[in-house]
Image (cartoon, rainbow, N blue to C red; front, side):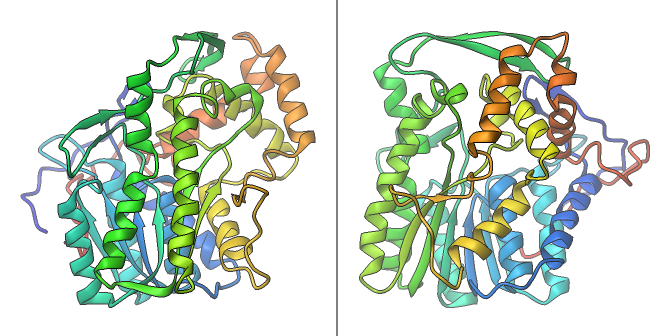
Length: 404
């Protein structure tokens, strides 16, 4: 899709709270290539052949698409909601990531297609189904990795907004401004019943179920199809605002949906899972009070022990050692895949808890990897990436090959 180009410009990071409002196309492309190079350096996977990733442009969704294409040689369809450059405004990071992925996939000889729009809508579901039917026939893996603050229900038209709040009582704990290292106490009032309802509607399993139902009804699923969605549990430190809060209630709904989908798909040899992943620097996690400080402490401990993983390492391990392991899929007593197992090692959590108790503004850079957190945050948007000249003009108006 060709658009009118805008003169080249120097692109610098501009932040508003936990959001970066600019993105650097060359930096994003280099970050994507780093992930591709990692996967190509690992043993090839025997696994998916035709893959649909819903929420494919950043974080775990993007990493899942990269592992599928460059680890297993799979054809992929990515669905995501990102914006192209407009005038002097840069495109979103996900747009640049997807452009880089599509270019690399084409060079590798795998089929790849991008659909940009609201994944919650009937229109995008129908468009995706038509594309799959025309270009791939059927798919054997669906990754559901949607992270959105809002959702408009395609049947009722109601728009829901999610909140990050505890349930039942006010919660207070340490948090950090990762831009300046200021450690303070965050106090969050509990969610109302309606806020809880809306958060579950946005972040729970209803839309995942809708996708599978419509793909199945359209006849574009292989009999042995696998579908996986992503979740997080985390330590006691974050439970009140995460696992035992509004987000946790939504994740419980997601896990219940996985059980229902597994029963539904198993009739023809299919399967559905929720994978509980490690805490990582993402646009979503940066918005959750307490979590950035916890991740900073966790990173310090896991890096010192040689156990640190980013999104791409996590997803390669999920595919190679869980989803497509030769000895079957290992799950816990609740049926969950646990690739947060290294994070949740008792010795790891004990060290993190010890650091947590001592963390202050004065020692945060000594007792945690806050600098690593901050750097990774900006790398999400293509900044602070080695080998990029950020003082040079760059064309921000990047086209995505195979955009449908």
